[in-house]
Length: 341
Image 1 (cartoon, rainbow, N blue to C red):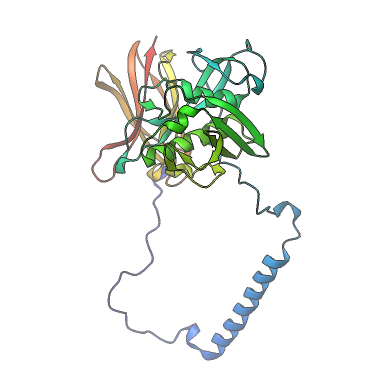
Image 2: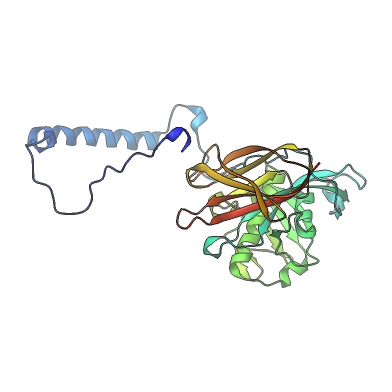
């Protein structure tokens, strides 16, 4: 922990024989027990009345049928200029402005190619700068980019079949109705991949359009709760908790293949034990820098981290990860290849 702070020791006594009884305590006296019981009943009645009657604070009213707002991952917008367009994305012509519009920068989620501990795969995100034909609606462009563009980072992958395309994206309140092409209906994969692919789609849509909180799938011309031959949840689909689907360690900047000056900042997010993120820099397979940095939060919440580096000219591999407390292995490694100078 930062500043040498330690977690408090557990105060629950260990299992074993009961200790000897000491002098009679406060709650051993019958009269006081009766008083405490009366007070407890009164507090319970007050709580019930508060729940039933509501609060006079108008700002605290909760709509029980509203779709919860998806949590915002740190840096949902790029902090550095993404790379130049790698492809032209064709989107439905009814979705936005005509072709020839300026390039659009959109967030796109991919799957990690390598499984983490427990054979679990996770989501990673890239910002893509793409030229569009047919429209410029960010959610539409992001989904089509997810379906058709390979990731920049070779450590990422996408499970969608060749030829998969967005047919239409409509909005009904805070739900996006996403219609996909017939190639998606015929594709088959394992249940874990299908579930994560559905979350890949949901995270991409809700990151591109923050007013959208959930996604309804239309595949093969009909509403469905299945993808790639497996049930992926009850529609409409919302973001699963980040800890379940988002990779514990991300490098956000620099992006894969970036050209950098000698002094640069590596910036990312993490949800790791005690917020400790380890990093190392390799050149031709040889480690030239290493260390650890504290994220702003950790151990169940996602925080941001950064480290400043100065390196001679050359080509490097920058890695960030969590160290296993069991055997010292590097876990949840995210890496970027960069060129200095």
